[in-house]
Image 1: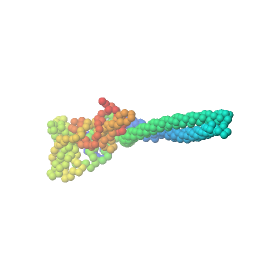
Image 2: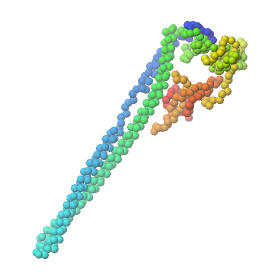
Image 3: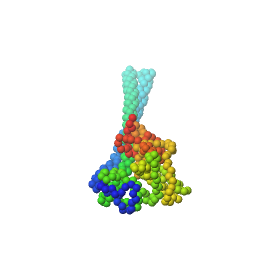
Length: 405
């Protein structure tokens, strides 16, 4: 900062200069913010890019199973036809055997005239041949039946192998889809968090650009009061606001003095009850300034915007030191802020085939009160898991985290 024109507690008119920032520092900060924004935009584009399509292996496995089932059906038809043909041949051979046996018996019983030895020998030869043919037909039928069983068993095993391959392919596809969905969900959560960071960065860029265009001069936009000024000449341009102005239309301000013993316990943000006649309201302490010579503390407190019935003059101030019991108190370091308000990050545990996974979840909270030492705060909200109060790197909602043991 080059020049500081105003100090805390000073009343300002619209256009009054407050400070002049160093243009070189402003330009460096703007360049760094633009580089960060470019990196954020590239990362956001990567997070929101369309995911690669999942190649399914189940379709090929289905086709293999269908072919195996069709082959089983064809094998059944073909082998059954062979069995039927062998069975018909056996029936025909048995019939020929019966006829040969009947002819031999007829010749053996013939008496007038009796059959010759040549006729009987020929009949016996015919019967032997018929019996051999019947036995061969019986063996052919047995072979056909055994072959049918073997081929059907092989075809059935092919079906079972195809079914097993299909089940594995479907499981692999399901796992791939689940993994892709989880990745998409995580990417979306990171993209949402990154979008909020980009919005803040864009606001900083707009503010830095406006400051550079004004030559680094910061002026009051309206008639107001400079409540806080944490800037000093020669210090680097602050990353966070070092100036705080009174809200527009906030005209009701109480000022009073406290002795050293009481002023030591008072700090900005605490509540004070202001009473004037029948009017009574709560005010918030803005500044507590110590007078080094007298040892007293000068206090300013802003009355509520809904306060009514007050006028310029003497009033009574009653300090409030909270004695309320709260169900949830957290370290101030656990409470975070974004454009949607205050929140904390809790750790959510989930289990999958890959093991246990911990994810940071955003839980909105309302800050009820901050302790006077600034270390703990009472909050209200639905907090179901362990709260992240500190981490060794930046954590955003939806990000995977590792819990220290």
